[in-house]
Image: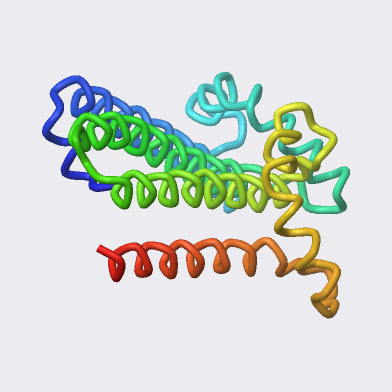
Length: 204
């Protein structure tokens, strides 16, 4: 979708800027937690000083579940602040992408009044490929966080992507603990999208 379409719409622009501010604040807070825990572990500041206690008072409800998950997966619970920063960054990018895609789609649909069938077919290709790409990215991030297909909020993601990823996984040789099938599926979606849009342009 053309990002410029979003910026010309006043409501979309306001929401986009507000989302950016919230994402930046969330990332800043996660970075603050990471730096505070790092300073405590390096004994730069006392563990029970007023600042670490203040940071723990609002970060513990988020860090405790991450620490339990890391411990259950055999990882180091002390890495929870670093995971929090990574998860916050990825979540912020996904939310920003979703907001821009939503308002970009609304603006694009409004601008396509009277367009021919090729333009509408191209829009359908872009929309379907975008939904698939986002679902694959959510599936990849979810697998890193231990959220599999049996989590209620992940079931639609697996339903959308299994038909594409599972055949690739069955034909792909093993690479140890790393599963490359979602990455290959993501690249395949981009290649098919590019090929179809190119074909539509040549028929124009």
